[in-house]
Length: 104
Image (cartoon, rainbow, N blue to C red; front, side, top):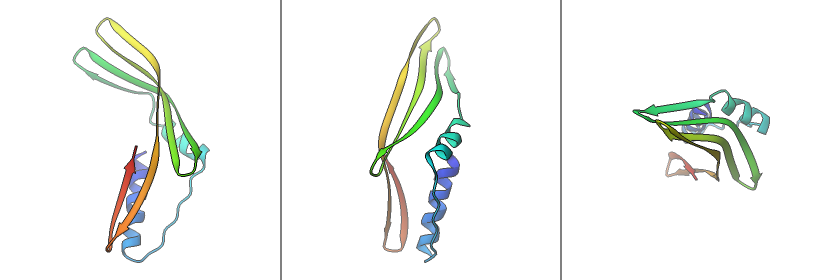
């Protein structure tokens, strides 16, 4: 995911200099890239969150989605479920400055 964001920022900088850059990703490529970074687990004291099995979706138009298995808990209790987010990616270039905005 960091690589994708880095590529977006590089593209924004190149367009500010008058250069043209285009990169396309298939849904299979996106899912493979995201899956490489999972499972992911974070712990703070007795609390934990574990994320696994991500699936990137392209529901249509300019929308992108991500769903994944989620487990969260504290010392002796854990909750399991599936979480999903959906949003749009937006690119804006204004007055020679390049700004990349990811809006969820």
